[in-house]
Image (tube, rainbow, N blue to C red; front, side, top):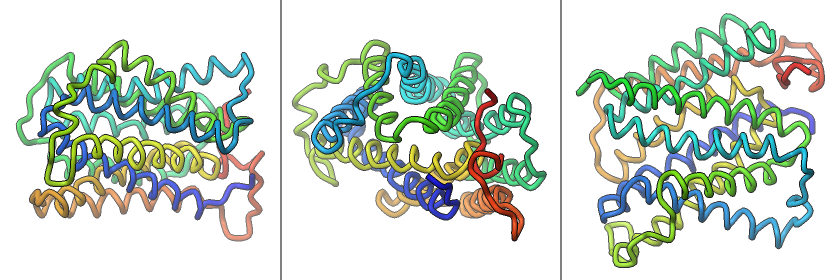
Length: 318
């Protein structure tokens, strides 16, 4: 498939919109009595079943994998799916949410450093400036200065979430050179579901009385179904597909739009207040993401070839 930057950008933003919908839905489910660990366990497990059933019916050939594929699939599922969730919730339990969010979303910096120093790809100065600007905007949206406290385990968990998120982008980009996005998403979710069930909590341990409880949006079970379908299955499908059109460093920065969208959704659906600083931070973040996206475009008249142009499709060194 020939990389298409416009399509890749649209896919990343669509993935961010769907993924951000998990915030308001999960918040209502947790207000009804579920723990964050229970919500994420159901989210990943139900998404894995939906991916598996969907492919079995529509495109069963995409379920066929080689024995050699399991190393990549295990890495993607353990780090890119389960690791991000587990590390983030450990961080949230010990440091303010804003700090945990900021730490996790430093992943674009880790991706950029990997691309520059491991792959040896020279990134434009505009890409570094845009990444820094986007992170500054994120810090303003998350208001990391409120209730700031230091906790070594919490900070390490936040950094771990960032490392796992970087693995999602890098492993995903590498694997998609030979594998279909739906194959990666399906097996990644299956591996992640098993890991989360073992480390956090199994999805079958949910109390039935809470699942039937009503919330302002609807019964808890419908919220969990929405998180699995919209915030996970659709979001991951779009996100993985985007890595076929844009390099991982660009996708990781564009994905920073998610917390801005989530904050806006909380304001619109849950009547949460937005400060002037948060609004300015959101605009700053989007401006930085736009700068990185522009930096990935070749000069006018330059013919992009997906196999040779680093900024068109950065691949791991062989």
